[in-house]
Image 1 (cartoon, rainbow, N blue to C red):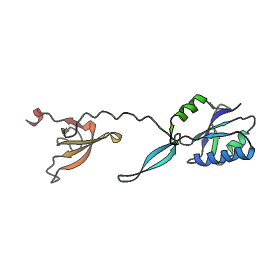
Image 2 (cartoon, rainbow, N blue to C red):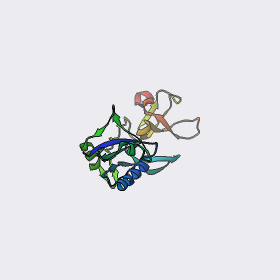
Image 3 (cartoon, helix red, strand yellow):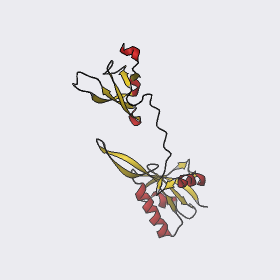
Image 4 (cartoon, rainbow, N blue to C red):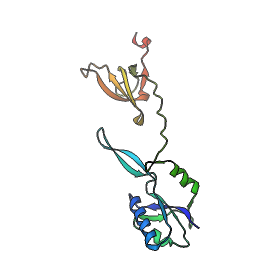
Length: 185
């Protein structure tokens, strides 16, 4: 009976394993279906430069639907790019069909569309005056410019005579507090 199984691949070998298993199915005239869900990732190319690349949804893993009564586990394990078949004890681990269908239902234009988490609420508004309570710039004030959620940092335009001009500086949000009029007086 055909079941979905999880295969563990060599590092960065998911694509190669998928191609090899597909050609193995054609050579053996067996029904082996390979599923490698992909996502688009944004990777850094340097300072402020990014590129979009396709990457596996589950790095080093891919799914294969096959029947071990007709296909040898040895031929799967020895396929180029495949490191092993994921097992529980000595039995290959089966993946429920509903899980595969759920992943497939999220594919848009060839890539799995993941639900994006809502941006975390930032406690400050753009243009709001803030004071740095802790850290190297403790006691200095500035204007809140923007929030970088991935780094939990805020860009602050510091009021600093030492720098000779107002300078945008990234500061951890946890180091900031709103500047009240009572603090100024």
